[in-house]
Length: 146
Image 1 (cartoon, rainbow, N blue to C red):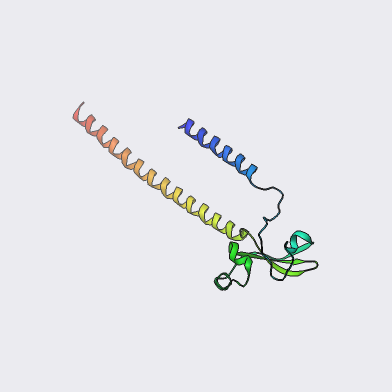
Image 2: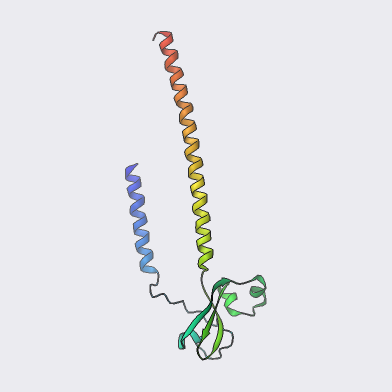
């Protein structure tokens, strides 16, 4: 049992190490071709100009995905409004919505906590039942004079 736990911890550390090497640490967004609305140059404006994020990453509506009005919504299903200094406001695609990921994580953690509490209660009840059976058998053996 102890070896199994040590193995799980070692595996987790190895996975975290590999993940840290594979994840870009510069904090820049991946390059998505065609994720702008009004820009006519070949490169998106946020790669060539200074920009400010006006609207953080949010999911696209079903209409935006189907209508293909915003190319950013077609690629990932998420959009982010960026205000470039020269080109103006454009949309770019982004990979994940932070608050949505946090909410999903909290839901998952809450479910796991509930399952562990339910499991602990079931184990406790079963242990009490087994203890009662054992005490009854011992009492029967004592009363039988064995």
